[in-house]
Structures are given as structure tokens and as C-alpha cells.
Image 1 (tube, rainbow, N blue to C red):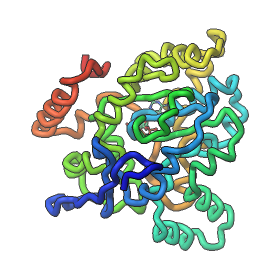
Image 2: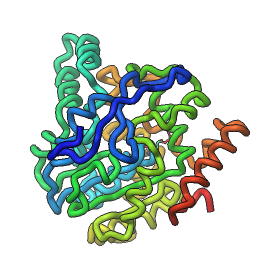
Image 3: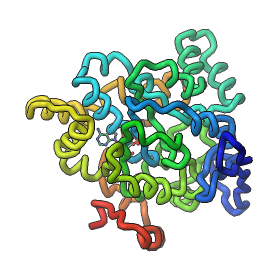
Image 4: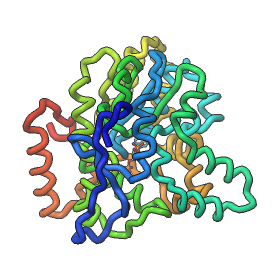
Length: 333
Ligand code: A3P
């Protein structure tokens, strides 16, 4: 599958029969690290890899459920002179196209969504936007262009580091618990197992393997155009993380302005902010209305989900994956 436009091989993956509870029936793996994606990603892999990069572009990227949305709002406000008014009017999903987002909406899913929203023109328009190529959306944006992705660096344009990139990482145990809840909240996800089952199939989730995704960014953390943040640091001392983001973008704000921004970004304010809390997904029928995208916002919540066996597995998994790197998580010090 590798060709002039795309350097990696894309292979179909057979999910072992023993894995009964799964959320994708058709997945592919990409390149030497074997990153997992739904099959539809084939259609967009090269388009994303070859998209134009402008020095004014701003990427916020991460493994899913690591605090991406939180970081996106923080970055957008810092870059846009703390323009709360526009931030409240334009949903985050419109301010940041989700580069590979359309990979989840194949033709039959799209049809189901459109059927479920018959007669509602506004929702039908939102659905068309969700399925539209995000690269096209980015191309239509004025600069600075804000981009959300969970793709690891190696699957992004080779020149992506000419843009400004902010990566956020989170303790994998918390990220995976949160990922489980996200999948559980999605109406069209083909998964109805419990967390223990989800844990066994973590390596078959999109954007995995987790550690490769994080390590690719970690290795570039000293690059002047990449800022590497930890969710746990943001939770512990948001002000310091905000200051790091301001320095990274060369922005100077007063103590009062920073205090106001931290207040805007608190979990409770975030949860009640329709511009960032993904109400759109409920509106168009992608997400169950009794579930929340902005869910608990805690560190260490994984302990309530892991039994002894899973804790031991996680310890071993983490230890093995940290052996060849100086990446260390604040939650594990
Ligand atoms: P939980 O499911 O553990 O609550 P992402 O945006 O990458 O999908 O990450 C989602 C996770 O970030 C969710 O974790 C969500 O609750 C948490 N989150 C979102 N906004 C937050 C905020 N303002 N403060 C703390 N955590 C937040």
C-alpha cells in the first residue's frame, strides 16, 4: 500500500476470535508501529500526510481522552488574545477541525444519522460537516488554523513541526478508563462489554499503541515548536501550565488575566460550557443523551476500575514500555 504519496504499509487486521467484545469490526494497522484505525482511514491517510503546513498553524494533539479538549480551549484563548466572546459563540469543534474524525463515519453510519435526523435541516447540515474531509475544512480556514488530532507525529505531515504543536499526555490507566466511557457513550459503537473486557482490547483501539503515540511526541519535547504537557500537571497547578502555553506562543498576560483564564477552564465551568462540551454529538444522535464527554476530570480514578490482576498487568505494561525511554509520568513519581 506504500506509494509515492504515502510511506507506510496499511494492512487489514484480523481481530482474534477470542476477542468477543470489540468496537470495530474492520480495522487496519499502519506502518512499523502498527497504529490501529478503522478501515475508512485508508481513504484519508495520504491526504493528511501530504497536507500543507503553515508556520502559523496550531496543532493540539494527544492520545484520546488525555485532556485534548481542555488543552484546545486553553491554547485557542491564549493565541486569540483571550477572546471569550468568540469562544462562547463558535463551538470548539468548529474552531478546530478534527483531522481524522470522519474516519468513524462510513456510508452506512452517515445514512443512519441522516435517517435519524430527517426533517431537521440544521442537524443534517451538522452531519455533513462531521463527515466532510477535515483537510478541506482546514484548507478553507483563515490563519492561524487550529487543528485537533490524535495521530502520532509520524502519521502527520513531515513538516508539521514547522507549525506550533502542543501535545498533552495522561496516565494511560486514566486515559483508557476514560476511553472506555467514551466508547460506551457512542450510540453507533459496536461495543457493549465492561471495562475489564475493554482493557483486554486496548491495543485494538484507534490511535493505539498508546506508548508509541506518546513517545513520538516526548522524543521531540525539546523542539522549539513542540510543547509537551501532562494532564496531571494541569490538574495540580493549572496556572503553571497556562504560563507555559503563554510563553510557548510568545503571549504576555497579567496575573488577573491568567486567573480569569484558569477559572474559565475549571472542570465545572467546562462541563457547563456548551461551546466545549460536545453537545453537538448528542444533537445529531451520535452520543447517548445521558452520557457526558466532559465526565469526571479526576486523576487516579482508574483505581476504581482495576482489580488486582489488571493492576499487575498495567504495572508490567508500563514498566516494559518505559524501559527504553526517559518518559516519566507525574502520577507515577
Ligand atoms: P474523564 O473521562 O476521566 O473525566 P479528551 O478531551 O482528550 O477526550 O479528554 C477527555 C478527558 O478530559 C475526560 O476525562 C474529561 O472529563 C477531561 N476534562 C475535560 N475538561 C476538563 C477540565 N476542564 N478539567 C479537567 N478535566 C477535564
